[in-house]
Amino acid sequence: MFSNYLIGLREGLEASLVVCILIAYLVKTGRRDALKPIWTGIGIAIAIAMGFGCALEFGSQELTFQAQEALGGSLSIVAVGLVTWMVFWMRRTARHLKSELHGRLDAALALGTGALVATAFLAVGREGLETALFVWASVHAASDGTPRPLVGVALGLATAVLLGWLFYRGALRINLAKFFTWTGGMLVVVAAGVLAYGFHDLQEANWVPGINELAFDISGAIPPDSWYGTLLKGVFNFQPDPTVVQITVWALYLVPVLALFLSPVGFASGKGKVKEPDEQGTQPSTASQA
Image (cartoon, rainbow, N blue to C red):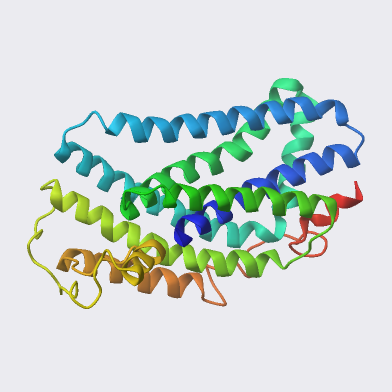
């Protein structure tokens, strides 16, 4: 449940900050007439993301078991790729996200209503589709027959909306660069578990060999149905009897990606490669001055 809460919080907060920046800029520049198209674009993006999630969930139920496993494994890999790209992208662009969005909004204001709707849709829609895919893959990997994974996602999204509103009102200020670094690192750990489970799905679909070659089996020490087994699975997608392929994939992804992401220099941090940072660094809560 915690891992799904983290996904909802992290992805939802990114979308909330984008909305906060767009709305605050229009209010601050006296363009309240443009708020309706912005909210329209945001609403369309949310509806499409929810529709995409529903299509994944209900569409896959009509498939055979082998096809379901193949689809689940393939989409898990795609989801991990998208989330990995997203956490690196956010760490590089968090410093100047506000100025980038302001530039896009200025161009859209000059073009008219349709451009405003498209700007809001594209800004939020990408986050929504990524969230829907990764949530589906994570819930699929951590599913225990209870609604807890979905409850975790819902709580995370609700928290993100609340934080976004507090940012807008100026009631909350945190170092977003550090926040996205820590949550991004935790998401990399979650993604490693989703990736390992995705390969397990492909093994069950007979797309990848080695389904019977276990790396170890500690089910006796950590029963999957125990409270601590459930906790480990919910947080890290831990499996007490992984295959050799799962352990190999997990390690090959987690070690280099986490090391690169947490590196103080180079690609992960984007030092020396970003434009002039926004005023007050990563604090979009200046929206409250609108």
